Length: 100
Image 1 (spheres, rainbow, N blue to C red):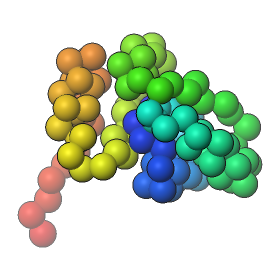
Image 2: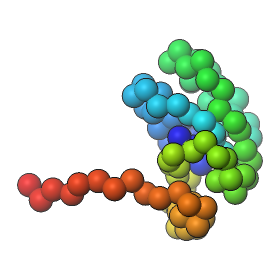
Image 3: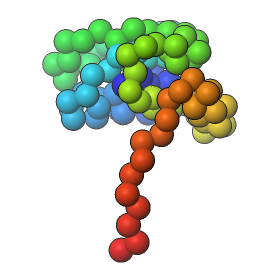
Image 4: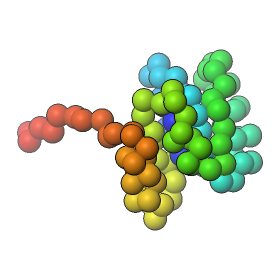
């Protein structure tokens, strides 16, 4: 999994991914100091992996080992990042929608 945005929301999502057995392959944030806050959060969960860190989301999207990308940036960035992710060949996961 790759995560774009490593602020509070991104760190929380990264933790949930790790708790559920997913491998965090890459992270991205324009504010690189946020990587320093992410590492202790992952260490606290016992995560031994070291995700590749990028300051440009386009470099993250070029990462060959990603099955999924999670966008955890402020809302006004979501549209452009989603379009870039789809253009890079990352597709949203299909899920069953139930009308209960």
